[in-house]
Amino acid sequence: MRGTLDKIVLVASTFVVMLAAELASAQAVERIVAVEARRVQLAQAAQDQIDGIVEVTREKVDEYRALLKEIDGLVVYNTLLDRQIADQERELDNLSASIDQVSVIERQVLPLLTRMIEGLEGFVSLDVPFLAAERTDRVAGLRSLLERSDVTASEKFRVVMEAWQIENDYGRTIEAYADQLQINGTNREVDVLRVGRVVLAYQTPDGALSGVWDQANRQWVPLGSEHRNSIRQGLRIARNQVSADMLLLPVAPPEEG
Image 1 (cartoon, rainbow, N blue to C red):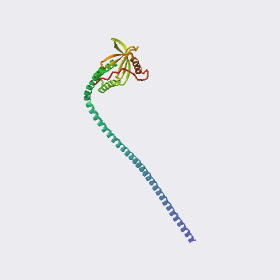
Image 2: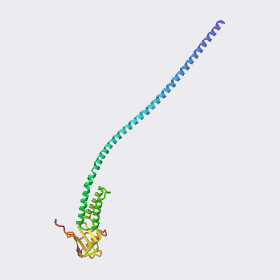
Image 3: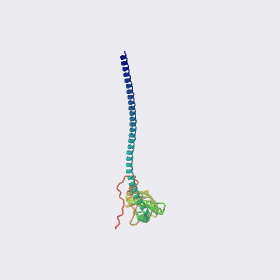
């Protein structure tokens, strides 16, 4: 009986020891699991921190690349601006030189314009006397324009050249206009026909009297009735009343050189 009891006590003691060992082992496992869980948390936190750093680094790199592109664009832009500024500086130098020459140019242009007006006046006075009042008034207007201080030299030059161009155009146009001429000592209303500077003829409205300008003798010469229809037809052509057609008009022979 004593032996059996000892065996029971031994088995119980062994069980208690085993149970204690298992409990200790379970606690160790729990501690290991806890430590591992903590390590995982720390690792995750570290990874999150690394991911954040990587993201920030990527943003900084993208920003740096964008800045580099912007800098490259600014370098190109500044280079173009430098070229433009250099070109503008050259232009300013040219303008400054031109401004310095304005007074010199005006001193040269005004005498030239004076001679051109005098030449035009002499030309009108010696030319075939068509539109005499209009052309004389134009020359007088040029003289008045030349004396005005509120008109630039360039504008004066333009107007004088325009007047010369008008005179030049008379040589290749046909025109009809009403005028008054002294015929046989009497002022008469007449229709004047000008064909360039080749023919200047007149005819009274009733067609009774006709004449032509004799440039060599500087006088009007009466024409016979045989020229009446030709002059009348020329007047109608000049007024665009009929289509252009051939005209048989008295033309003075060219003067000998």
